[in-house]
Length: 198
Image (cartoon, rainbow, N blue to C red):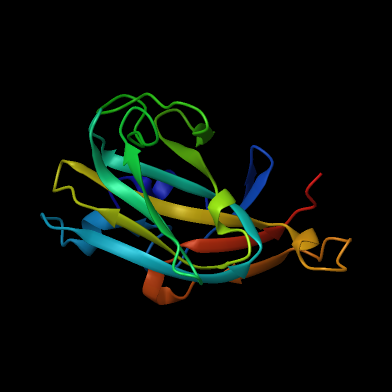
């Protein structure tokens, strides 16, 4: 779709984070442009996570037709106690075009490049979940309010990092486990990782 066939698939590690990028009949990502029927209108995908002790989320996300300085995309983290915080994803800051030569080309840390070939790229965004301590991260929603040839984000994968020491009596990290998002999410891979916090 839109030339994204060159993007990697399967389990990949970028900047020390492991992601699972699906390669199914619906492609290797959730594409807001496809969800909108290649036209206008707001589109979104909600990924049910239900992860306790979540500390951060890393995503692999870009746009097709990035727009600078204005946000047409948000990511919202929802917790079990009602905490909900939409975060704007801004072109030439958090998000940029997946092509190396058109639309938006800049990113600002903590967003970093995860993968590239000679003409395409995939960027990694990092979100701290400090306000969610003591809650279960129940879902993550990506919303896009762009149009055809205007913004239109896609999500290839995400990783949720957890703190296993947050449970009383737990001193050793549990093994990592991998969960695949169902076909209804158009092949987005979801990976949960447990990390020891220092």
